[in-house]
Image (cartoon, rainbow, N blue to C red; front, side):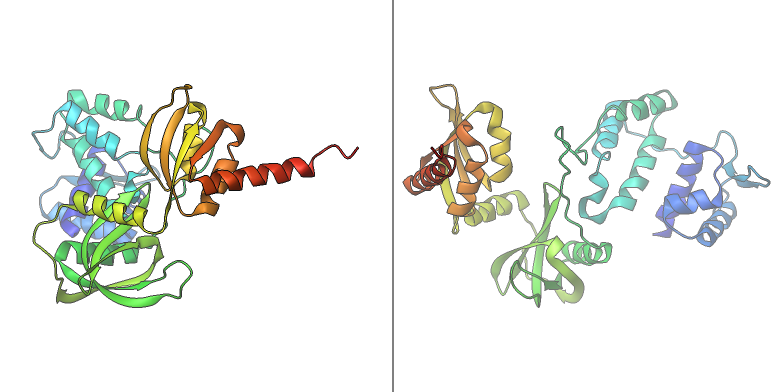
Length: 323
């Protein structure tokens, strides 16, 4: 890990010029003393870094020194910079590694492309924290120590012991065989097996994790995309309610925000959209459709239509003219 940090230190000085030890410590997420030791190590290795003392002093590389990385064109670097923007640093707890990689990407560009790509990347915003209606995007919080243990076990192929808290039940320790990690809408899931049975764990509900030395029972090759589709299909068919809805196109997103999943979608003869949606249960479906008033109509199941009609009738009776 120290070698990566030394490279990042050099790239920081290459990009920004003179920097103080405190600034370098913040960027590298280490102590000032560690930075000073790293500077000494670089000097001993022949890297031309020197200290400028005084009020505006700091550390700097001799003019003209740079690391040489090749094979990256302008569009490739721009793609990486854009992918690393926004809240991408939260994915799988690799924030510091992503920051280091982005510095290397910028430094790898030819001089003529470096400024252009950096400026262009500022024109892209990936997954901001709020949408156009100022609704804050909810992101699962996973402690860094938990994420690190889970990630190590997944990559090393070791068994994993987790303290998991399912919804509505007390937390319990369990040992699993990790298969892989999946991130969906800023939620991270651990795909695993337990005693041979498929299990999917939401990482924000993992209170603690411990990588074990035993080898996990899993295949050498894995198709996470296929596994995720299969588990999603099983989840949607297990105790959920499927509803056929006709909705005003202008309210489509409002409806999708409340549904568990979309099974099918197409135009309706009257200009509306016809959607087949999955909800947690009948109460969830009734609540979601009630929010949209006359902009949405449940076509099936009949029990949902009856529940919505009875609710509307009760509301109309409550507000009837007293005279």
